[in-house]
Image 1: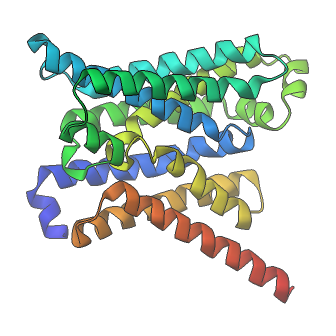
Image 2: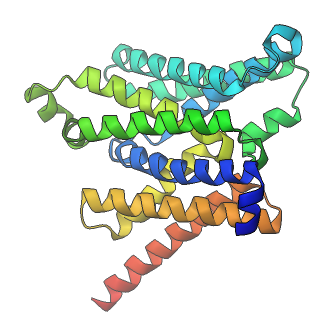
Length: 279
């Protein structure tokens, strides 16, 4: 496979993209899980699906849209969905968690309508739903590198604010932190990472890459920074291992990555239980 990496551009694109996604998805996922917003990834992934379906519909109906990367409209829909979630959180102040299932339901509904208007599923849409190694282009890689650079830079710059906001929002407000602005930036980052991850993992499975490595690391980590480190490590193992196994066994990369993440989670739970019994 190492020899094939030097000969096939799509494998190079897939592995570089996988390494990047394996780091930034769990990195952002730690803050998502701690803030109890795990379902937001599912909601925005379905909104992204609506954007992808709309892009493919436009490409089918209008020749002027042929050749335009569906990733752009998917990212646009994902960001718009995140803005609607933020708006609904302010509308339902005492029931803020309602914002996520509302957007999730809307995303599914709009996506199904666009898919039906495009006369059903096609190969391109399936590759976005479940991930496809061969579908990752140089353009996709460049976009993902840009998103990763932005996300990492923002997390480094706003680490203290995000940390305080994740564990004690009231104290963050009392400390003078612009909570609404920070949350706005945070939810935009989540939307961009979800849209970027769909090429490798697939829209329907992308949320697992943001939550499963974090769930595993929580079982064995002794602090917040260690949780981040283990989450990224488990994410990379899942992605790289999943891509290698899917290449040799001719399996769907998204599903293979998720199954490896589940196995790592099970092993972390067993490890924690064994340590508890031996203590």
